[in-house]
Length: 320
Image (tube, rainbow, N blue to C red):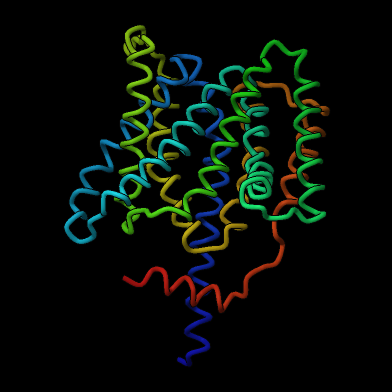
């Protein structure tokens, strides 16, 4: 077998893995919002976030400790991971779960897709990176679509402006964490990195629900089976598997490809919420959501990476 054919085979295998990983990422990011809604209607949303990350941390931590001797992390790296955990799991995910409590799940997913819009704005405001004409158009179109969806959904009792505000704050926090992560030291081992993030998020959220009295008023025995199923999905399918897939994709493929879920997941969420939660899928909702997602799509760099160069980069990164 020649070097060229070997590289082609390697790229085909990598492409199959990437396709599967991206497809899974689309699904769980869309289904997340249904789980947020179901679990958040049975428990306080902050309690849902606390249980989600605490249970996930308990699962991951023993495996991370077992790998510590082979790849120890410094105090500064652990602190960096903790900061990312607070930013991307507490400030982002907890606020998003809370916001979804006040919104239809499909609508919340569209608001949650606006991370690229905030990413462009933060890059311009904080890093002095100028916006291109297409990015400016994307920001304008994206926020116009969100405003239209909010305005047309306001008549529904299931929509409350505070939910939209919380969802946007959560999305902005995710964008801030995405900008911060490449600029600080993090543990080299992805499992230790994930464990540190989950542990920090669980500790902060645990303190919040304890001090606020939310924990004292929580009665897990009264949770209905659908809420337990939603929580199990968030812990296993979303946090343990999904977040690991997200981190791996970000490390091994282009940021553009890794973040395509921003406009695929809301479509899945709108369809699943209509099918499973019986949320109305109106023409106005479809149109306003399409406008918002068109703005997000305008933010995506459409220059595809060269397959062979991407394969070389992939192999370089997975080499121990």
